[in-house]
Image (cartoon, each protein chain N blue to C red):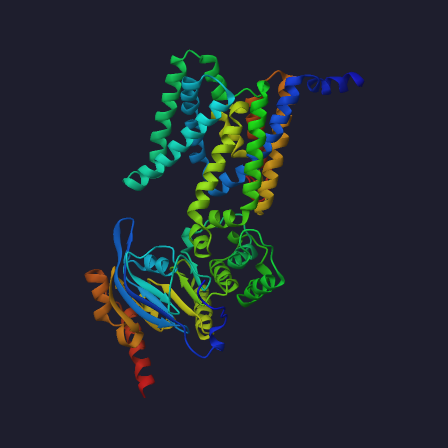
Length: 281
Length: 272
């Protein structure tokens, strides 16, 4: 019996597992909470494009300043903003719609990122930026995750009422005095920050899964927006932390395991949801 | 806001005016509304009619303060309509609304209190009372905790009107409120709109079913980007103006003919 408990708790003996658990808690909860906004805003594809746009920013940052957590953070942020605002400018200034503009800009930027990283000869890092490595969280990574979690959670909670109104019907919200355009920028900016916080853990491709799935699972079960936010946060945190243990016990890579667990949980929810699932009554 | 607090029009003895003067609005770089002028006041039920793309929705959005005029101006109670006003409620077309959004009927109605509560302030007793009264008036009390997709079309429309009541709006701007409603729901909505206007509110709706205009409205703006005519039904709702707006494509159907006849009959009754 005590052997079993030892085996259960063994992952906690290791320093990097403890760090990974803290990261999973911070990143999982923040992403899960924010995922409610992505699901309600129906912005999954947009956020997916922005997550890919992080890569060239990191590449250029490495090119200019060498590899460090902070430069990658700033580079990713700038690249996502350029792609996001650029697509807006293209759609406003021409007949190309914003989704098309976004697709053009982010694929071009993503390719640029790959070319630069290959040329720099940092192929190992390339796969790490693409798919993450939650087992090697540095102090700076944890700080970035913590600061972003604080900013995102307080802002999203404080602005919840006008944000929900905007996501429900922007014209009605505007006619009641909600500053719709400004809020839209704030929301997209926060979502980019949240994407960046999960970069080191799950990489820029899998980050999207963490920033969509948790609230999507809740959406199968609830009609309350606040349950969507908090429930999404709890699902994100619990499944991310579970993935650290499961990854250790079964010798699986932890980052992808997080997203895999979320996918499995969504599939189960889709099957058993009494009202909005496959076998709804 | 420049307007004094003033909640019920029928108690104040005079009528508040909405004046649109020489309005020009571009929408996505094309001219959507060209030189529209009208003056109406609380207690009226006004229809905006015209073919698709005539600028009806754009005009409604401009009055709601959602689009800025390129020329001309809109005055409500003598003051320019700025970005938005608590006293003017906007109800979008049904297909613009995401009905699967996780919100209850009460949640929709509570949005009407946003101008009072702002970002954070919690609901006061007065806010709750106003919301409950609005739910009662629109007969939604039993449905208040339902998710909005679980309602019928007529009930959904009433939920949005209840939101306007919770907002304590004087002017209700409705974009095609009758579209997609079945016959009983349409009749129910006519009763509701009549009551709102007789209680002293100004009801303005875009409307595409010409034959039913006389059953619902007492004033009409006939437009095709530019203004064809505005006034009482008996003065302007006739074949000359309608065909001028719709062009040759419109058939002079028996239903439409009957509608014109009803308008003229009412006119004679009034003059006798």
